[in-house]
Structure formats: structure tokens, C-alpha cells
Length: 383
Image (cartoon, rainbow, N blue to C red; front, side, top):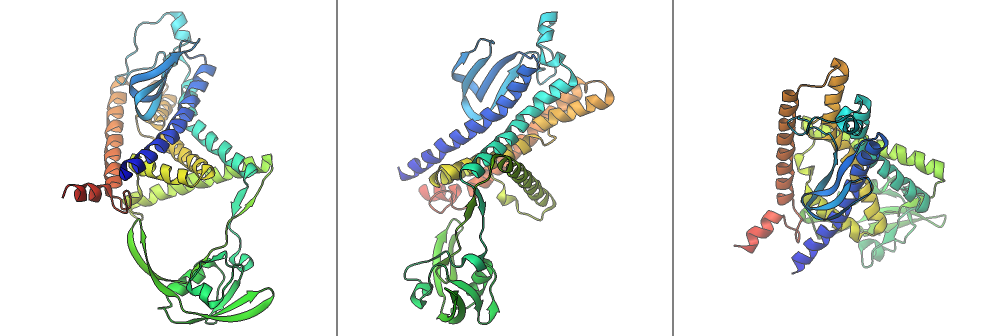
């Protein structure tokens, strides 16, 4: 029952996060399509049979469907997978048909989905920077120790929050990572700390303790002092500064994601970092437990990734359609139907293969259930 409640909790938040991001993405397609005079027949969150919905005055069916892993906007006059038009159209129908719009209009409609995800991230981040503030890691030398754990080696030696550690055994300490490394390599022997407290210099002798902790990766043992890094500081920004900072932060996260993908492709980074629905569901639950701000921040990051992935030049994704339109712009005519059909089949195969791969990754990922992977959990359950 505890497992089911944990899984149910993660699933609920996963569906909340996914529904918001899919709605934003599809709303981008819908809004630009309507601005270009295209009739939108269906706006669906999810795939498969309709659960519930309504039809608006513009004759668009808004609905939630049974399989909540995505969504779509169906526009009047779109080609099917085989590229065939639905029927011979009247002039009135051509005026509201997607395929009868200019190349620029069609490309704008397709690009609008990913663009909406990036815009959503910028708006969310800008709002957080104005309301909560932009997080900044304070200088360890200026802020000192953030906290001292009770009954720890540091507490028994007399360390206090705010103490500035200047050196250990004569070795200068300029960051919390320097401190962590010196303690980890101590072997448990007593170390002399030069500390600044209230303008005075003190010498404290502390012997780090070997402690074993259980993490998602399993049990790990290391020498610990029992101090915490200084907490994040938040600087509230004005509207213009917040928007500009949100734009630059979105750009930085986009570049970082592309860099990580490139490292995976060339083999400099492990594929075990790739996650699918199960891992995203778990992360959704974890961030929800961290509070509203943490969850909203996670949604902004996920929105950037969703927008970026959709721009990859793979048929079936928005980027694949944009690739077809780029070829049309160069050649002066649409890519022939057979080439589009084969491209879409290859794209579908690639996407399905990737989904299988990341789902297997999710299944064997440590820490998914009670410190174990899903595979280990079910193995132990039935053996």
C-alpha cells in the first residue's frame, strides 16, 4: 500500500506537470494557426478515445483523451501521414486550410509549439526572479559555515554557524568544495582548522567521522565534519532585469542541454542519464514535495527541454516538419509524398526506439522504489 501511495503521488504530479506543458505547447500551435485564419478542428490533451470535452463557437473540439502522454492540435486541411488531402476543397475551405497557407505561415504554426515552451519558461523564471528573487550562491569565505549538525564532529569541537574556515592544516580553504575534499581525504585523523569568528582567529582541532548513509545509489561511507554550506541568497529583480535574466538563463540551460546531448552522442557521457516517463514522474513527485517554488522551477526546466527536443530535425517532431519546409523553401516545391512518408516512418521508428530505451533505463535506475530499481523491486516481490 505504501508503494502504491508513493507511486500514485508521483503519477498525479507527473500528470499535472505534463498536462500544463503539453497544453502550453499545443496552445502555441493553436494560437498562431488561428492568427493565420486556419480552422482548428481538435485541441486534445492526450491521445486515444475522448474522456470528456466541449466544442467552442469556432467549431474546435477541446478534449481530454485516455492516454495522457502528449497531445495534438488537428488543423483543417492537414495532410495525413501518407500525405493525402482529405477531399477536393471549395474556395471557402481552402481559405481556412492549413495546407493552402503560405510556406511562412505553415512554418510559423509548427515553430509556435516549441516557441511557446521557451516563452513559458521565460515567463515563469521572470516571475520567480521578481517575486522570490534570483538565487545566488554566497561566497564561502564571506558567508562562512551555513549550519552545524548536532552531535557531529564539528559541533563537539565547538564550531558555530557563520565561522569562516580560512585553512586546514595550513592549506588555504576558499570554497565549500575545498573543505569537503580535505575532510574526505583526512582518513579520520584530527585536523587543525584556522577559523575566523567575530574578527578573531581561532584554532580548532576536529577529527572527521566515518559515516555510512543510504542514498538512491545505495550505501556509501565517507568522512564527514557535520557542517552545511551557506544557504542560497535571493536578490529580487525589477521587471526588465527579471525578463532579461530569464532570457539569458533559458539560453544557458538550452546550451547546457545541447552540450550534454552532444557528450552522450560522442560517448563522453553515460546514457544512464537519459530518463523517460517513470523517472520524470518520480522527479515530479520529488519536486512537489519540495514545495510550489521547486515544482514551478522544475516545470520551467522541463518546458525548455520539451521545446528543444521538439526542434530536433526528426520527422514526426516539429523540427522534422520544419526540415521538410526548409527543403520546400530551397527547391520551390514540397517534398514528394513518398519521401515524406518514408521520413515519417523513420522518425516514428527512432522515437519509439528512444522511448523503449529510456523506459528500460527507468526500470533499472537505482532508487526508484525504496532505494531499489523497479526491476529489483519486482524481482524481490516474486522471489
